[in-house]
Length: 278
Image (cartoon, rainbow, N blue to C red; front, side, top):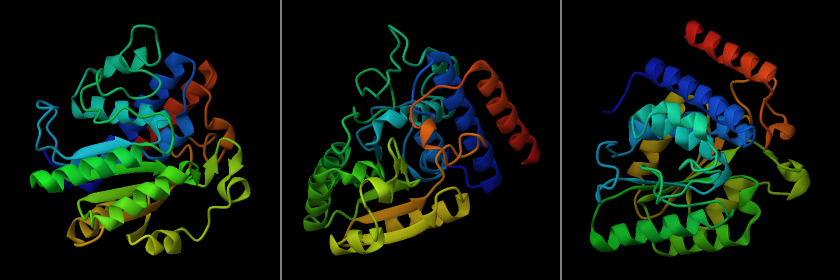
């Protein structure tokens, strides 16, 4: 069911963030920062934009989502649980021995995961292949691919962008989670990836810049991407790493560590308070 009420979507996004914290805390490891930054994006995709049915996770006519920044899978797992693909209690088994919710998403183990990812830079190539296949089969499927701004330092990403442009994949939408931080610090200081709009335009993409935490703006951006014909789109979503948890926001140190019990309680208290405010 498509949810159009923006306030309802905002509340779902908070629940997604709570699931992220729950998963990483119980695992005592994981990547909360980049998961929290893409929570709003995933919420809008699964609850407002994508043609998916949690009761038919393998429907050949469904839209596809490739989380190329696979280490942010707590966000994907949490949104899938919120959507009803599996029980939310399973989030507490994240990264534990025997759990299907591994540290990177596995399409053979988790319903709703469309591509196994983890090696950065490779997910977009898979998404391009899916979009080409949809065109060949005249299936009408939309393919969405979330990449990280540290990840796009990988050369394979730009090879995939070239292929997407050459094949005029207007059924492909790339979303750049532009939180400006990677494991070693600020993006521009580490890899020098600036002038992103011009870079993507030079590769033949329709470029849409948006506040990645503004639900209304995200809906408008995805709508524009769907209406664009003859070329693929990229949404540069300006986000905040660790969004929603004050002491994690804009802190590179929260790229890949779990909260302590005290930090977990503080984070959940903040998120629960934001639900009351909404």
